[in-house]
Length: 161
Length: 161
DNA sequence: CGTTACGTTCAGTCCGATTTGAACGCTGGC
DNA sequence: GCCAGCGTTCAAATCGGACTGAACGTAACG
Image 1: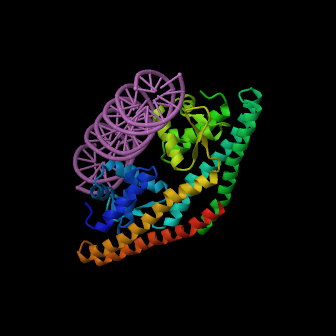
Image 2 (image 1 turned 30 degrees about the vertical axis):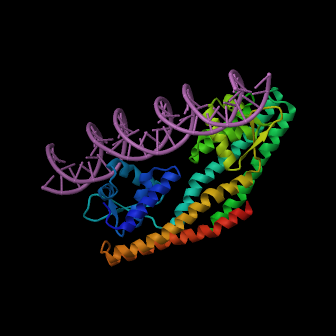
Image 3 (image 1 turned 90 degrees about the vertical axis):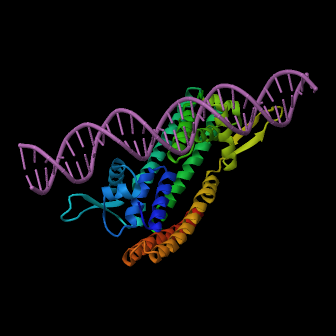
């Protein structure tokens, strides 16, 4: 159990946030808990305070470490792993972009190029009339234009964040 | 069934995109299908081409209409509803921001303010030591700073998109 | 008016993803 | 070298949410 109501509320907010963006709720809770903890916590601390299983805490912390959002620290004279939050939120956001969004955007442009060639095949094979083909081509161009704009905006965000 | 492989691929991409961002797959499929259709489609067209139930198609189209991503058009001499995609992707993205992200950011700032007052209560009630309180306060400030930065960036994005 | 064709609604089902408990392997201490 | 303490792994349970089929309400057409 968590004594402080502020911590409790922050943990809940973290959990809800993750759930909303399609990540495991427990991961948001763990990060929230560590973010407001003045000293590193052990797996057992986490399982007790959040009332989640050891398994969830274990995979959750490792995931957060992989993302660079949590650090593992060793406390002298204590065998257990200790964890603390990496408090540089901006860097975490940046990394999330570089690791998740960016590759997705790249893949999306690749797919777009592939689609345009498939569209030509469709025309050649008679699966589309010339009119349909032209229509689809113009619509795909719109998608391409949006992708370009995203490409322009993204570095801006990266810079101003 | 969809003849054109390009259309088929585009529909799949739309479905996957929605699934990734936590929306019903069928919604992405419907928008993808309409986006590459040179003429408006009926509910039955949609259910047949996407092989989904009438219920899903009905709910999906209405959701898309509510978001301004799809228009309902009446075809003379035909009782059925017809649907066509709104092709202005930028506007749809903007609207998605105004309707989803923006309110969420606002709510997040409200919550942040509430958290800071709860933190004071915790201190007063002895649920946190003064040191813990100060630590939490400084951490919460970081969250506040991130929110400010988001506030700065978001209009930029809106403008350049 | 009665009938038929449509779209909507709702309860039930299904599916993917997270969470859990238990078994396992490893490491350090005695 | 054995034992206890810890973290990890994996199959099974659980959960939330999307999808479906059937019943319903409505409007057009004869």
